[in-house]
Image (cartoon, rainbow, N blue to C red; front, side, top):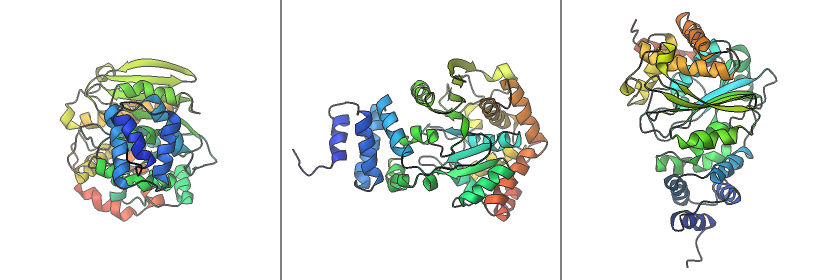
Length: 360
């Protein structure tokens, strides 16, 4: 036996050789060592990969979640409740930034959004990548972020700012290049202290129950965990969507089918992108109302679900109509401009606008 092995290497052996799952305490210990710089990038990458290949257990997810949570910096707005919309990432097919577009439309429809996000670790464009291109300052002060939430109805909480310990493992995550347990727990760790609702998309059906069981013990009043049956980590209009809905203490399983809401059934490739700038363009076109109806339907479906968990509408159909109207009347476009004005450089947003294609 090699006595020079690090504690994390011992846990990797347990997972890989013994094919055993870690306890919550072991997982928290592992993440504490990774967060404080006690392990090399190679060992961190091996650990994250080992968990992903085995499939993360409930205790491993809970341990990672608690390890991240106890090191976060809180964002504490002294105003009414907010919601969040995000996906766990890691799906093989890369969509345009549906969750960010939906967040803007949701805010434009009157529901306050504290969007939590990061750069993409495995795809062309995460929410932070998109917003940075159009002028958002990822290093905005908490005061500017709060002002945007108060005045515009939306803000963006860049994960590395509020979870600085995660920066210590960003190189290893990027090198791994696949979904890890941090993709699972990251969306659950929004630092906004008065979050009341959340829409989370997952790319594996097994995560529906795992994440719902963890979230039901949080302070959220409502949430949806959604799995698109063709593997997208958000609600889509390409197929039926399996959803677990939590509303005031009760969990229920529902099936959301686009045809039940007069949404155009889309081909999968209509929602996918291959580059960062294609993602930026299509995401903006969706917000501005320039995109095809299939693309806009994907956004309004997610915005409608967000409005439902935010208690701004009583039915999904009402949310779809409200979201669509706020794209058509320009409120969504104005909301995006408002966000960038408060927390960035609007000139960069204006510079991107001429590249958009109005398909109507």
